[in-house]
Length: 166
View 1 (cartoon, one colour):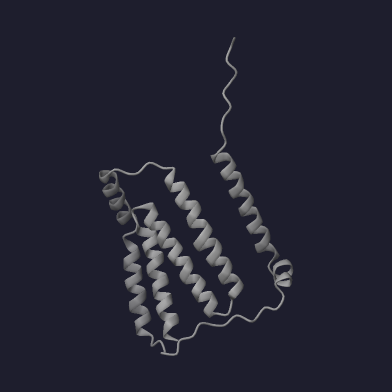
View 2 (cartoon, helix red, strand yellow):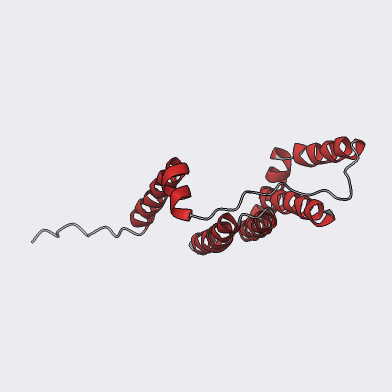
C-alpha cells in the first residue's frame, strides 16, 4: 500500500533529522519520532508485541533518559552552537548525497501502487518465543539493562568526604 511507502520515507527523514540536528533536544525528538514510525510499521506488519516494546521503550523511556541527561549539561552559547552546526554538516555532508542517490536509484525501479510490507506470522505463545526462540536476545537485553543500571549508579554516586584530621 502507499501508506507503507510514505511511512518508510518519513522514517528515513526522521532518522536523518536525528543525525544532523545540532541541538541534542532536537536529536532526541527525531530519535523518538523514528521509533514511533518504526512502531507503526511493526503494527502494520502484524508484529504487535515488538511494536508495543518499541513504542514504550524506544519512543518513551529512552527519550526521557536522554532528556534527563541533557538537563544536567550546560547549554551551548550561540557561537558554540554555530560551530557545532558547522562541524555536524562537515562530518555528515555525504548523507544528503546518499539520500538523493538512493531516491534516484529507487525511482528507476517502478514501485507498484500496491506496495505491501511482508507480514509476520501470528504468535500464539509469547513465552515460547521469548524463552526458546529468542533466548539470546533476551539475555542481551538483560545485560544492557544491568549495564544501564550500573551507569546510573556510577553517575549519581556521591563521594563521601574524607575524615578531617582532629
